[in-house]
Image (cartoon, rainbow, N blue to C red; front, side):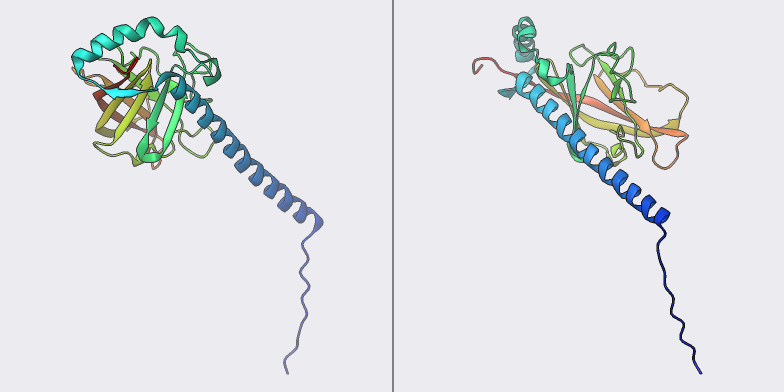
Length: 222
């Protein structure tokens, strides 16, 4: 003889409450991320619209001439709606665009943004070395979460003072996190991106790129 036992499973009121709270937190987190990304995209668009119209690839001699023409007009192109960014970092492979602040700006830190590391030199300087750090992980400020996907010869762009600087990745390695990065001297202008390793949190990824091209905003169809 088989006995049939009816089992009533009821979710307690407390259990229901925690489930609802979890759903609300999860939903709000994704809504906040969506709105945050939307605002950032608008800021980047405003910066590029104000600073990077009518681009044209030029050779080195023409670059020097145009650079001198552009310098006196920098204040005219300052866009207060672009969140006071001084430049934009773009990584096409991972569909990434993010503005960055002057190194002395209080918002220039990895807890709020990507961070330009002190003693970096901007790409308009000969043999420049621009070092930018960012968080990976799962937080809302994990701007470099997909940095590990970059590979050799991938392109990275910096938009700075009306000029688009094009870099190619030439070296990728991991090192122990000790608060420093050793970079060999180079005759090339370089961009260095760094973040925590996804596989080993005691290490950091270092990605070095060399400048290969400059695309300048041309004035009056020049």
